[in-house]
Length: 307
Image (cartoon, rainbow, N blue to C red):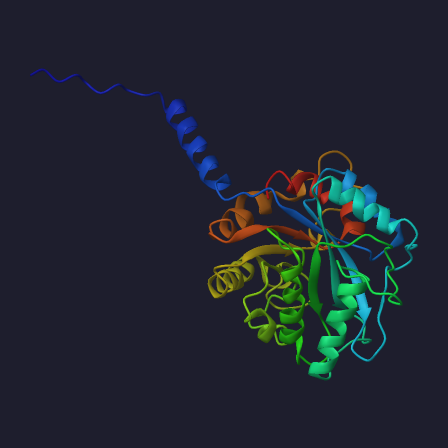
């Protein structure tokens, strides 16, 4: 039998094939999911405007920041409450999830007892979720958010696991879907000192890990090596939970008001960090802190194509 000589491929053809294969591998785990925190600065624009950008799959209203001691209130940092309820409905009509985040940087909250956890769950249900009870003030009128995010930055860790269990219990009132979705936004160190017990309940469908700020494992302090090391710990610890990479445009290196494409400032994300974190089977997407700086830097206009 005669054997044919193998075809000789031009080096440029080989290079093209290799680049194509590498590009395919890099994008294999992309989900296109981008979550943004809204409500921290009046200069960020309305909730409706954020949803109409076509960038985000989830918007998190922040924060419900006073609770646990018989008082319940939120802080939207200069935003008027008027119209927020209508904006929530508008976002939901565009298939964008709207969550309400509890906690934040203030010191007006804690859960001193099991009874306080039950009372906070009751208030969230009747004031912001699907419940209705006479005498309970609904800041967003008849609009109901899709779930609750835990962003616990201050105080003791007690009873947040009980709060999560009680909130999840309201799903018994829904048929065929989850009406109360739970997410958490811990700091990058594992375990999180305040949310560890709550996360161990297994009730949280996603975790937005904060790789920004002053922690040594943040991108700004520890670089890609530190982020990837902690990321692998988070994804391994919660394999049934979607884990999101939390980043801050203010720390990204993109100058405010940058002209032209901002992609040139973010090459380290595309070529280095994102391909590494997207190897995880439970990679969920990217979380953006926050809409105000995202709007000024146009960070998500680039990253949404890489997420």
